[in-house]
Each structure stands twice: as C-alpha cells, then as structure tokens.
Image (cartoon, rainbow, N blue to C red; front, side, top):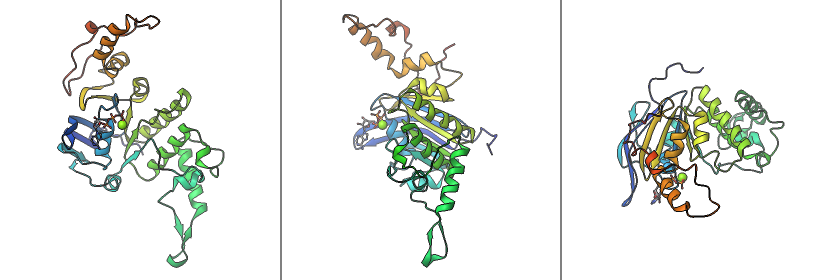
Length: 290
Ligand SMILES: Nc1ncnc2c1ncn2[C@@H]1O[C@H](COP(=O)(O)OP(=O)(O)OP(=O)(O)O)[C@@H](O)[C@H]1O
Ligand SMILES: [Mg+2]
C-alpha cells in the first residue's frame, strides 16, 4: 500500500509567517512534506518549532505566506479540520488516560460500537482485536492490551500514539519532540516506529532538537533559528556534523568556546572555531558538505 510516487507534496508551506500581536514568531518559512519521507524540523528553544507545527495541525492560523494541503490553499481554524485532511499530530504530553487499558486508549474518542441506537454498546471485542492487529502491523508487540497505558514505557506510549494515528487514516504525521524525554533505548524504539510510519507511505514531520535522532531517520532537514529557516537541505546535501553545528547555533558555540577556554575543567577542544563556520545560508539555499 506504500504509494510509489514521491511527487506531490502532502503539505507545502511557502513563505509562511506568524505574528502573535507584535511578536514575530515565524517568518518566510518554506517546507514540504512528502509521502514516504521524513522531514525533520530542528531548532533551539524559542526557534519557532511549535509555532510551525501548530499552524500545520490547525491550532493557529498563519499570518503570512501560503499553506497548501494536498495542493489546495488552506488555513485551518481547528485541529479537526487538519485531521479531516489526514494531518495528525502526536503531542509530547500525549492526550491519553494512563489508568485505562491500552486498547481503550487506542480508541479514545473514536470508540467502536455495535447494535442499534437505543441499545448501542461498546464493541469491546472488536476494539481489542483491531488495536492488536494495528499495533502488530507496526511491529509493536505488547504482552497484554488490558494493561493500563501508564504501565508502558515512554517509548511504547509514543509508539501506540503513532499506530493510532496511522489506523485512523493519517497521511501526514507530526511528532512534536517525541524523543525529548526519553533515554537512548526508548528513543530508539520511537525512531523505529517513525521509520515504520514512513515505510507505510506517511509523510512524517519530526520535530526535535537532537541532530543525531534526526539524522537516523530524516530525508530532509530544516533548521529554524529565531523564527526563520537558516538551513533547508536534503540528506545528500548535509552531513551530521554540519547539521550539528547548525543546530548548536555554530556562531554561538564559537563564541562560547572563546569564553569557556578560560575556564578550567571545561574541554572546548571539539567546539567549532568561528573560522570553521560559513555564514548562515539564506532560506532554501542548501549547504554542501562534501
Ligand atoms: N501564544 C504566544 N503568544 C506570544 N508569543 C508566543 C506565543 N507562542 C510562542 N510565542 C513566541 O514565539 C517564539 C517561538 O516560540 P515556539 O514555542 O514556537 O518555539 P519552539 O521552537 O517550539 O521552542 P521550544 O523548543 O522551547 O518548544 C518565542 O519567542 C515565543 O516566545
Ligand atoms: Mg516547542
């Protein structure tokens, strides 16, 4: 069922900007999300990552530029409208009920029922069966779907949320820092399902401040800095090291190196020198790292 075409973008932003009153949180952002591809959005605190995904997921409207979904210009007034177009967002504070069983959480808000209206009841058997099938299809094997969701590890909970979005027909999956609170192993678990969603043909937007996580699964990398895109490059155009330097705010690190060089016990040897850094590329212009 994986779509072969990697042409038409599922979501396309052109010169998108957003002001909160007179605070300019985002400006001139270009981004495309394609089926079977992982687009990584990186950036430091306050760079505008959440603002960007809130626009795509229907929580905020953009105030400048063009936002196309399936080729049509859109401006969502609610997350429901985004969902109707197959754009699903998994937030870090997952909207789940930890004390309820896994299968119940899988269907939360979209419970399956059976029987005619006045005596309609939850179709528990079908929900359990379907949740089990969908989780297995993503390679997620849980011993017991009756266990409360809260007993799963952070990585497993994220995975259930990803499988849920896939089941309910998402074509675009937005993940807001899914690995931020996780250790190495659990992050690995989540990255595996990011790849599984990609392989099922979804367009994934992976928000992270970790260039290593991004580079493990990413096809395209967009680095936000103070609300503008300072790097937009495909995998063949940027290496992990360059991405890390961009992410770290190369110029700031170089300045930090200078400052920390005087401090005993702080090893600044591996920090970039100012002379190592190219001037930030203008939007859209990909750096070459070969
Ligand atoms: N509702 C709001 N009203 C006013 N300013 C806002 C609002 N939301 C965000 N901002 C501002 O917009 C800028 C970008 O914020 P945003 O939350 O998008 O950054 P971020 O990259 O997600 O940061 P973090 O890594 O901390 O989550 C910040 O300067 C922030 O203070
Ligand atoms: Mg944020």
